[in-house]
Image 1 (spheres, helix red, strand yellow):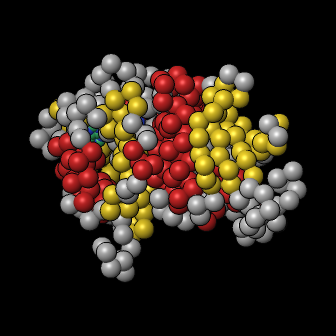
Image 2 (cartoon, protein in one colour):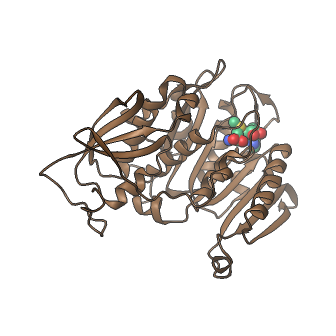
Length: 369
Ligand SMILES: C[S@@+](CC[C@H](N)C(=O)[O-])C[C@H]1O[C@@H](n2cnc3c(N)ncnc32)[C@H](O)[C@@H]1O
């Protein structure tokens, strides 16, 4: 019924006669990932989407249940097809329903997802950033670019400068975007190369793999592995390809490794000091990632395009939000504030409480920059 009433254009059609009621049923796995906090995480993600992508059309957001299953209820006035397409990407959403007299009618937007879900779920290893959380971090970071057209229609360029075995890279690929990664650990980048080469073959996606050494000023900074591929042979021949580019290198060289590039998004999960230490410029393995983040932020900010956003997840047992805000602000990045950003803190295990922080690189003409 919602779709039938919908205009074919992307204009919002206010429906003052009756505000529509909606319910989002949560992915069953969300409770496992976020302990008790799943529905609040979804509420915060919906809040960020509403603020940056949906023009504040959503209101009265509240936690409820469908039978015994937790759900998020909200009301909205005249959601467009484009709004529904955005909501179809929420990381913990299982099904979105329109509610009529307590009867539920499924409402489908078109998600960005291009490939089978196994792209995200096959690789399992100690220290993997949970894929549902990675999707949330990517969504929230992308939303703050404040451009629904960029989020839904552009082939964004995403860098994970601490990419491990590529959870962020795979999420970017899933959305049809280009994925760039840097990690210092040869074991991690090697495992990712092996995985993605196999996956491209298994899915029979036409692709070209390349490997090279990266040199600057006569010095070797690292090794590069890249894969260019497309969903179909026709797309490949027409140069409508996607790129994966992974460097085995120190992230402190990010600006040299990617000079001249402007990434739309930087999305990364900082070392937790539990599975992964942070390697800083003295090649010291530290349990506290602040020193690495402080050193690395200059280069990361340099390769982010004006108007782009950086989203960082970290262990709050080791570093405070205030320290990260100071590190980001010192590089001219504007930390995105607001109530929704208080809603992402959650427990991972005995040693890790995780949160996320997002900052934007101002446009050059922005007077507040
Ligand atoms: C939390 S893990 C990222 C996990 C990744 N998101 C995944 O799901 O596989 C942090 C990563 O930072 C990397 N790292 C630590 N110091 C680094 C440095 N100086 N340069 C590049 N990578 C570094 C570690 O090797 C580790 O893979």
